[in-house]
Image (cartoon, rainbow, N blue to C red):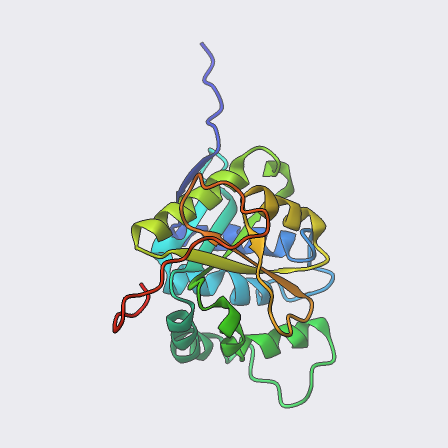
Length: 231
């Protein structure tokens, strides 16, 4: 009897997944499509949006394994954005600054704009997002989209956050990426108004898996007790 091909499955990130995760990031970083023409340095986008999470928050990094051991999708993030920003500044930037030094002049290319963002992690902290302390990045190769894997990855991440006591999560997405917005809408995310979002739209939701969509209303995020910080 012939052996059946193994099915894709979600598992924890492993250091051996680094190159595959970077490839997924680069292959989806231009409005969901391949970004190599826009950002010729293939390490740049992963250095901002994938690798630091795998390094600083490995317990919140999950991949979609295609069944052969290759990561073809991932979700990464943090349960505490403010703390993550501190560690990004103190730990991550020193690891990569030799390759991407802080720019001395205003950016002139898309790649230079990304390097400028790399050296400004405090941009992740916005007062409007205080009630959504976690944030995430999720990407899947096109061949594995629209098959339920994105929802499964998201639910895995949300459950991990909920188990830590984190009440809500946010993300920033390029407003022009309409397919991504439709995906997040289906998963119950709602828009969070931000004073000056630039090219981004911010979305958020509760970490409770199975909660219905909120039809534009934010989830009920419990306030911390007096004297107690948010989880």
